[in-house]
Structure formats: structure tokens, C-alpha cells
Length: 383
Ligand code: EGV
Image 1 (cartoon, protein in one colour):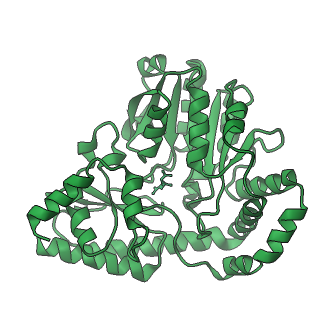
Image 2 (cartoon, protein in one colour):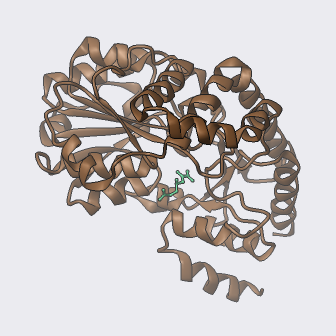
Image 3 (tube, helix red, strand yellow):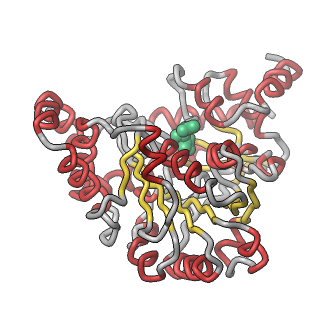
């Protein structure tokens, strides 16, 4: 394609949301667009998959309540979340974290019409919240990490929503910040909502969040996700966990949407979580670290190119290219059948801030990442 055609091509997609750009990549072998896990199974994960017929029969014969509590027990303990409220029906299993998010949003909007949301973050979060009629105010990431939130902001909203580790930046709210945030929310009677879908990649996000939230005693809700970690072909669970004092119709709205998650999937999650606790997470962290080094290594030294998230251990990596728009690079890569995400839509309040960055998904085979990074290198070297 000529530059003019590339421009037309990127203009056609500039308003697409991130997931619509991810659809375009689904049938490509060089799909570095979505943040789902598409690497090969490890040896011990393959053993679990080989036992699927047996797991299926066992799942059919076991009461679902038992399967659910084994699944969340294994998963939350593997991630250090020992004080999660597993015993009294406050952990709701959903088909995905986005479904959990939709249920939470519908519950929140019955009481609250203004919400503060981290900026940037994955666009389906603001889109779901706005979709139910909530008005959003941005919290800049630096502000969230550096100091208390302004009282004026907390006085103007009924809830605060934070993704930690954040997608795409990988930044983590540490224990001290979470405690302060929860205290501020309690003082202002603001509901604190967290999305921790990427915490499995980062030990810094695995201190016991529930211990902090329960100690502080604010109203809170947490969305957890098994979906980003293991290559289970999107067989996954999103959990919606809530405080006893939340006092929003979460159970009722959950019942509007689903009866429950498949017993087979609950069993799979239990087994993958046990495997993760048993060395699988360490292996995953090493794998992602290798992939991040390969991408950074292949792109090192290109003029104007940098990696804004130096300390991220998440399964995505942003690449910044000064002097070239992200949609332009996206279209040039797509010409070569390589799919990434341009980052402007993560910046839901100010898309221009994302115009110089693209996002690579790292939960892929290493050789695939290497060849896609080489393609980017040659595109940028050609100017
Ligand atoms: C990421 C896909 C949805 C989302 C991918 C994601 N979009 N659910 N609408 O799961 O980072 O690529 O979070």
C-alpha cells in the first residue's frame, strides 16, 4: 500500500474500539493484539488437558457449590488473596471479567451516577460504565500513585474504579496506596472498585488486597480474572467479589445475567490454579520476561523508539515511537499481517495522549514475537 492508502486504511478504523481491532487479528498467525493467553501449554498444563474426559465426568458428578469453592479457593490462595470472602456467597463466578464488570456497573448505577476511573485503561471499562449511564471523571495514573486523591474529586463521585496492575501500563497500586485509597473512600462513602485481571503476572500485586479492604472497612468490589493467564482457549472465569456492606443489588443483577459457570470450567480453573501455585506461576513469569526481553532486544537502538513501562511484568508491552502516529504504524504492520493495538483508545479521556504508542501482547510463542518485532524494526528503519 502507498502512504495515502495506509492513511485511508487507518482513518477507517480510528473510531473502532480496541476489541474491534482485536477481532481483525483473530485469524492471523501474527496476532499480537488481544491480551488473552495464546502461548503453548506447559508440560504440566498439557497433563491436565489430557485428562479432560475424566475431569468432565468428575465435574458432572460433583455438586457445583463444591466445584466453585474449590476453584476460587485454589485461585485466590495461589495469588496471595487469603482473606477473600470465600465462605458466604460473596464470590460470584461469571463467564468473563467483562461480564462481571457489566453486572457490577448495572448494580452501581442504581445508586451512583458519577464515577472516577483510572486513565489510561482498557477501553471496554469506560465503555461499559458509560453504557449503563455513568458519567466518568479521569484519575491520572501519576496522581493515583503519588498522593491522596483530591477531596473535591471524592466529593463529586460515588465510586472510584482502578485497574491494578493496569492495562496497558502494568503499574501496580502498592499496599500502602491501597490502604490510603480505601481509607479515603470510607471517609467519603465512595465505593472502591478494583479490576485485578492481570495480577497473576506480578508478585507486587499479590499482597492480600482483601485483608486491607476488610480492615479498612470501606464499601468495595473486586473483579478477578483467570482469563489472561493460561492458554485454555478462553475457558475461564471472571469473579465478582463484594464487601458485606456494599448494599447494591449485585446478586439480583447477577441472576438477570446467568445461572452459573460451567462445572467443567470451574474444575479446569481449580487444576490450572493448583499447577500455578506449584511452580506454574514462576514458569509463566520467566516466560513473559523472556518474551519482553526478545521484543526489547529486537527493537533496541531504533531512533525515537522507547519502552515507557520499564518496570512492567505484565503480559503486554507498550512501544513508543516518537514522530509516527500509532494508527500509522498499526496500518503498516497490518499490511505485513502483523496485528498489534494502537494505544489511543486506552486514553479514553484524552486519546491524543496515546497517539505515539502501540501495544504488543506477550503471551505468545517466543519465535512469533521475535519475527513480529523484526517486522516492526524493518518498517521503522525504512521510515
Ligand atoms: C486486552 C477483550 C472485551 C478483552 C481483551 C483485553 N475485549 N472483553 N470486550 O478481554 O487487554 O486485550 O483485556
